[in-house]
Structure formats: structure tokens, C-alpha cells
Length: 362
Image (cartoon, rainbow, N blue to C red):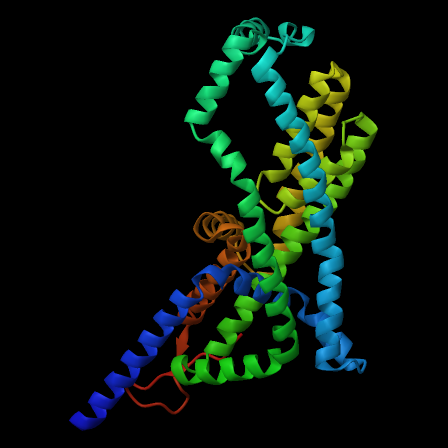
């Protein structure tokens, strides 16, 4: 290359990198919406292809699928938030009463095994007396817990904005996804070579399998455990069922809700129901998390179980909730590169010394 060509190439690369960084900076607040829209589109892309094959057109399929997403995901989420708001109002009112008059020690506290005496003494010292309750309230405010609770309203509004942009992104991906995918494959082939499409397919397969393994299994857990809450007599079983379904997408989220439901039964002195619900919930979570979910995710993506866990937890810690799907996709692409590079190399039939031929893909 001549010095002029080298300078031109360097300037072009610098411009591309600068534009990419500026774009990320401009879109930083909306990256979660773009990520969620992409994940949902990839997971439901077969449904979009099915609708187009039946003559709905790209725009029609986009409208139908966005409406389906709103009905299946957004509407239940709104119901859950409304119910949660009502419950929080009751909790806030109880906290105000606690601050003014204190809360007497329930009889069941002292009957708890091992910790009953200690817990009853702590309750009497910190919650039963009004002065002690006000002191505990001041400590919570000093720790920032009450400030965090007051900030839930503004955080909820921010989440609504992200949700609106997610649905908007989802519509345009449904409508223009073919052109976007074609352009992406063309650019990837130019930059990374012929293996780029294979890596993209692995990432897409990982995202789709992770959505099936997390979302669908989570909804099933919420439904089954919700029936258990109804039978056991848990207060507000629908609310607990929604919470289980939502938190089941996060590892160890469903057991947390189940334990809280058991504790609610213990508070009402329904010890037998609490024990039976705990055993039932443990069985459901054990089957879902250790048998069904790894099979759905691992078999589709050929990811080892350890990589599944690393992808889920690492993605969750790094990218938040959307990292549940991004993490396995990244590891699936990395593992595909590893396997591609580790394929054995054979000599070509008529190759001379030093000449090699790649092994056929398989």
C-alpha cells in the first residue's frame, strides 16, 4: 500500500470508531430498550415468519406481534404493578402506625424453634414500644432505605419510558428485520470472513433457547406455584403467583418468593400449610431449574451446563436483567469460535510440503 492509501484507511477506521462511540454515548439511556427489543424479536421471529407466510405482510405481522407482546407481557405486568402498589400502600400505612404506636409481639414469634426467644425479645425492644419503633424508623432513614422507597415512583416512570421504546424498537425490527439482517451479514462477512454468519446463528440460537428456558419455564413455575398458594391459603395468591413468574427468570428468584409466601403462612400460625408449601415449592423449583431449564437451554445451543450458569449470572451482573439473554449469546459465540478453531486440519490429497487443507465442517 502507498502511504496515501494507508493514511486514508487509518482515517476511515478512526472515523468509524469515533462515530460508534458517539452513537453509544447518545443512545446510552436507550440501550436497554434496544437490547430488549432485539431479544424479543429474535425469540419470536418464527412467529413473524409464520404470519408473513399467511399473507399479513411485514407491517401487519409487526402490528399483530407487538399487540400480542402487549397482551401477554405488558398487561400482566401492569396488573402486577397495580396490585403491588395497593400492597405497598398498606405496608406504608402499617409503617406509619408502627412509628406512632408500635406493634405488639405476636404469639407465634415466641414459639418459633431455636430463635423464638431471641426474636421475641428483639421485637419487644424494637417494635412493640413506640419510642423504640421511632428510633428504628430513624435508623432506616439514615441507611437510605426510606429514600430508596420514595424513589420508586420516578424509577417506575423511567421503566415505562424504556418499555415504550422497547415496543417501538420491536415494531421496526419486525417490519425491517430482513433488510437489517442482510446488511449485518454483508458487513460481518467483509470484516470477519465467511465464519461470521455461523457465529451469528449460534448467538441467535442461544438467545432464543435462553428465552424459552427462562421465560416459558418461569411462567410455568408461576402458574404451578400460584395454584399451590391458592390451596395453601396464602394471602393474595395472584400477586404471589405474578411475582413468582416474573422473578423465576432470575436464578433463585422463584424460591425467594416461595419462602416469603411460607413466611406469610407462618405469621398466620398456619405451620402445617407452610411446611407443605415449602416442600411443594422446593420440588417445583428443583425440577424446573435443574432439569427442564438446562435441557431447554443447553440442548439447543450445545452449551455445557457450567457455561449456561456463567452466562446467566455473568450477564445478569454485568448488563442487568437483559444480561440473562445477552450473556449466554456471547458465550455461545465465543464457544463457536473455540470449536471452529479447534477443528482438526488435514492434508490436502495432492498438497505438497507445507500445504494444508481445512477439515470439512461437521
